Image (tube, rainbow, N blue to C red; front, side):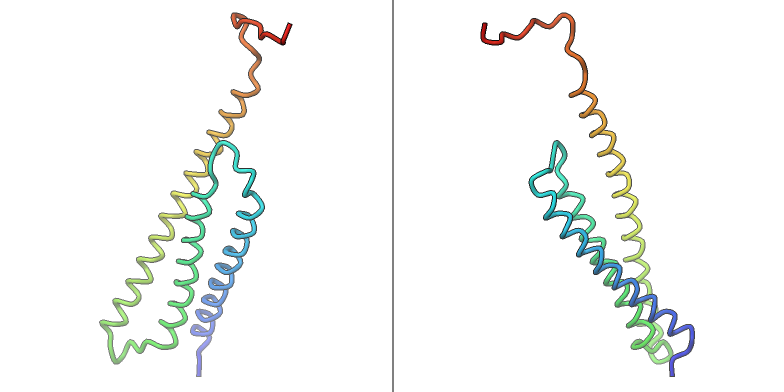
Length: 134
């Protein structure tokens, strides 16, 4: 019989997998909708990184479930330890990718702001007038 702590971890693992699947679906839809509207900065870098993050999140959810329901820590404590160290490593990797993604988005927003402000600047006074076909 499963205890309440085990049920909490199982429900959390299922929620992680469900959120990863929803993130994957959202990313695929977004990528299809902006295929022709990329603008000055390619968006495929962000979607690739976020797809990897969603996959790692789903893997962590499955590993949480397996770690609670399948692995017996009494019979093999070393396997139990290595398994949870692997889960912890994936979580640290996920955190690092999330931080890198946040900084990349901030940098991209600053680049887009700079790019859009350059295109809206008035023409310089010392510039020659354009020939309009006169």
